[in-house]
Image (cartoon, rainbow, N blue to C red):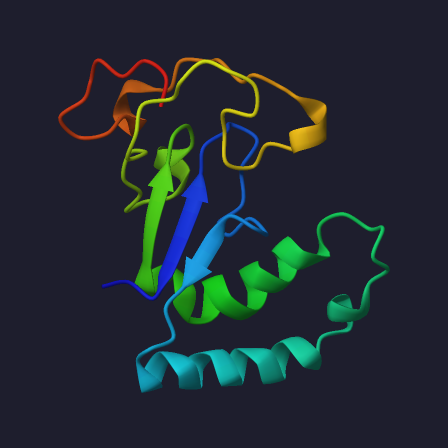
Length: 133
């Protein structure tokens, strides 16, 4: 399997690992070691201590200390709109349904319905008919 799982299901999700939209499997000792090394590096990065009301430091930390060092090569990526920017991405596993908060990164309080056709090249293999993915 892949120790990193990245999910991007909105055209504004233009970063490899979005805070809150990724997961990891640390059951393998070698992956656990990679995470220990990454955490040591993260804790030595001044960006880690950015004010809580600043947007973006979490994504920069994930990009610089996980994605660029080892995560990209060991990831499973689901992408609905920007698959061409993220080689190796596969289409979203389910068809998008109509309704509010219908994407993974939705901010619940905003009650937004996102409805935009996804590019054909980003659609799930075997489901070219999924206009919304």
